[in-house]
Length: 293
Image (tube, rainbow, N blue to C red; front, side):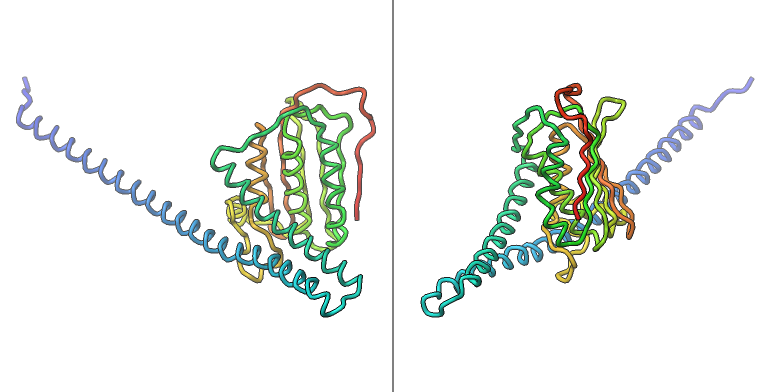
């Protein structure tokens, strides 16, 4: 009969425990190293975004302020240097446009700050999404015409209503559509669609044939204050808050926003809302089909 050696067994058990402890420490060190590497990359990206934001904000704020100060000074000197009426009107319009741009920048910063602090409030009511989309397209008709971009809006007739804050839902689509117009070259297209899904939700999409983004650029664009092209020579201006604000507002409405983009092909933004009411037979059964050039 064979008898096990208690001393040998104890030594073997001790070696196994030591081996397990060494392996555990090695795994922990490896995970810690990977976590530190990921945190360092994230910190570097956040630092770069912050630096670019400060530089971009300086430009975004100073440019309209210089316009307001410069042209208001010219108007104030009207007594010493008589200005034609048409010049006064032109200067006044430039001041108004610059002030509007400045207000939009400030509102974007305040919005993202309130969203991130959890203090953003919605006034929810029953909304007709097709009417909101039509209003957004109409408000951006001039911008699309100046950019020589064709905007099309095709919405399934008699959509179920959604529950939400009308002002904020309009802000979502104004941000997305204006973004598409901004980053779509001349003779390009922006297509807005909305239709009900079999699972009871409503899908609204904003598609464009613009410059598109790579996966890495999309990640940067979705960060608050992130600019895909952060250089001072970038070909389009902006705060880098349009997409993050739109996504946050969609989620505050209980919806979901998904972005599909391909470099030099275009971008497709899909927004899912929960339908809150059945079809309204009293409303027009004609499809909304608006095209603006």
